[in-house]
Structures are given as structure tokens and as C-alpha cells.
Image 1 (cartoon, one colour):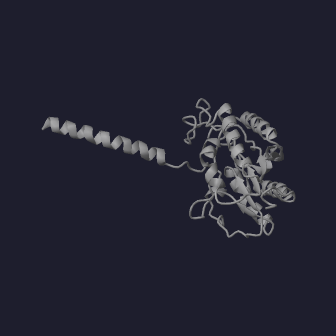
Image 2 (cartoon, one colour):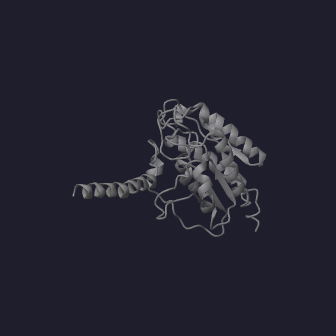
Length: 259
């Protein structure tokens, strides 16, 4: 009887342990503190006008914060999309380049794109429990989600996929943040990753929308306290700039726009 009990115990452990690991891996990453736009329900799904050009915005929660205002500004001039949940109620956070490489085909599928405005960086440079994973860390001793060389490789692969669409491409630089934000991010890394991204964009002749420079000298006015996210005024300032550069791009037809 004692032997039977021991065997039963080992069997339970064997079955339960993989199930627990699987559940942990399946848990989606949660929005970071301050990402109010990411959790707010809105009119993310809409009926596009087939006579208008199609614009795609790809990016993390910073871009989520300005997407709906850009759509409103360009109403009647363009259909403005971004990845959203299956039920259309929530925006999808495109996160870092690791997710970008895995998801870019899905994001581009099903439509001809005239303009694509995109950014990756803020999630790549954050510290995580394990490189490439989503579980955030508050320790600078842990690795970045994508170290600089991995970021360069991933972003280059994403750019190749975007270029194949023949859309007009616009890259938004990663906005800055103060010391002490959580998850851990080194303020100097915003410049480091922007330098890498700009190098890639210039090699592919891609326009750069420098949101970093737009906001950097106005952080106290535009950004939430000790946070990577922006307040309502900051989101509006960004939306106005993004809408302006997209509208200018629409004035110079691409291959898709002239089909």
C-alpha cells in the first residue's frame, strides 16, 4: 500500500508539472502601468471606404495612444488601421521586434497598403526575465528583450517584409523616458536603439518621423510622471505630427495608390 501511494504521488507530479508550465507560457503580457489607451475600449473596428487609400499603424502602446486621433484627423482622406483583437474592441500591442518578426505577415495580410507608419524599440530595450520573452523585469541586471544585435537583425527582417508591400513607409523613432521607470529601461538606450533603427531606415531610404525629438524637450509637459506613456496633451501632440506626415505621404502616390 505504501508503494502504491508513492507511485500515485509521482504520477500526479508528472502530470501536473507540464500543465503548470504550459499555463505560465500561455499567459499574455499585461499592459504596463500608465498605458490607459491600451485598456480603454473604443471604436477600433470600423467600416473602411473602398475609395480611400489604406494606412496601417504598427507599434506599441505609444502608437495605440494616438491611433484613434490620427484616424479622426484623416477621416475622408484615408482608412487608418492598426492590429486589433478579434472582437474589434481592443487594440493589439505590437510590442517588440521579436513579436514583430513572428506577426508581421498576419498584420499585413488581407489588404493593399498605401502608407505604413511603424515603430519598434520601447519593448526591445526593456529588461525582461529571459531574453526574447515578455515577462518584464525591474532589474537592470536582467537582459533586454532584444539586445542591440538581435534588434538590428529583427528590425531588418521586418523592414524587408514591409518594403515588399510597395507602400510608402514611415518609421517613428522611439520616444524617451526618465530614469526609474518600471519595467527597467535605461534612458540612454532610447538613443542607442534609435541610432540602430535610423541606420536601417536610411539604408532602405525610409522616411523618419522623429517623435523622440518632438517630445524630448517637453517631457514634463507631455509625459506621465516617471512613466514611458504620455498624457492626453502628449498623445494629441503625437497624433497631430503622425497625421501630418501620413497626409503628406498620401500626396505622393505609391505603387499601390496608382493601381
